[in-house]
Image 1 (spheres, one colour):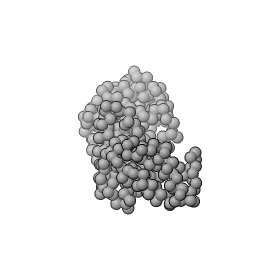
Image 2 (tube, rainbow, N blue to C red):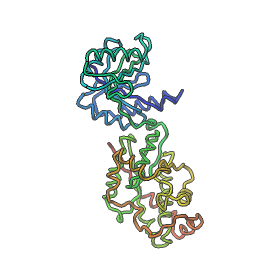
Image 3 (tube, rainbow, N blue to C red):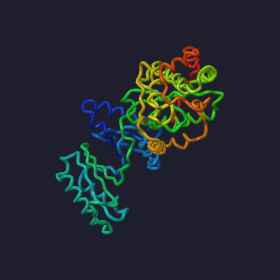
Image 4 (cartoon, rainbow, N blue to C red):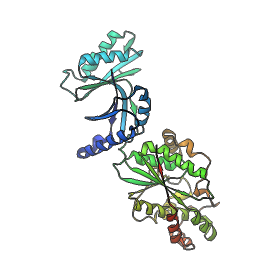
Length: 388
């Protein structure tokens, strides 16, 4: 038997004349993600094939494939040269190991090698399975097992029982690059994942307030970034100190505006970093109305400082339960809830302004040397490369 992993993509099929570009990028991403394994990856029409791997590594390879954006589904399959005899033989071998009810589904991309149509092939192979495995019964509507037959144009047929579903979306690198405002919370890692799923190559900026925030908080963010790397392909974090800005706001401004002014500083720094490093967008984990800083009024006055790149908020209409479900799915939730504070919790006011007005915010901002503080924050930038 020739064991392979069959990879299928979904949304790329809609790309028309540009489809080749998306297929090429996805192929490169698959090769890169699996480079630590000794194997080969090949492209066939509408599919990618992983072959010549150590069977002992199969579960690890399947797990890694499941985190590559752009992949709709994948299966561990047996590959045979296309003929009814070869398909029958491998189908019987596979189904001898199961019991209960079954059906056969055939996808026939190659319509020349075998004269029968898809339904006829399914019926023929199903009959042969019944002859060899009299402990099985056919159930077309609600089978316990489905045997899939995928007949490709390269004269190879793939036979398998299980389909695993991937991240979906578009391959990372096909939709530009973005800078994620990565805190230590639940939302921002999910936002990064959501944009990677749409083909964005994600890097991150993290704002700290050392010594008010501990090294544990930093380690938590680096851990979150590492959990995202299988989905984002790579991750660079720009660590930026907000200590001076927070101290100056606390000493000189109405504390109700602390979070608003701090976030204006963060977004100012983030835009500069994005322009400096060629990122095409800022990405945040904001959800409308979730907290005081995420009302439409707060988001509007904070966004006002960003002039040259768009701000993307993939979670803006999510409720917290939806975000938590995704965080658990991608494995970031347990790290996100570890009790280490980020800089937004330092000097937190008792009653933050919920509906700030821009002229009042600017009036408070003028009480400090905002521009020079931002310049010094830019000088504090530390670059951290995260590897899988």
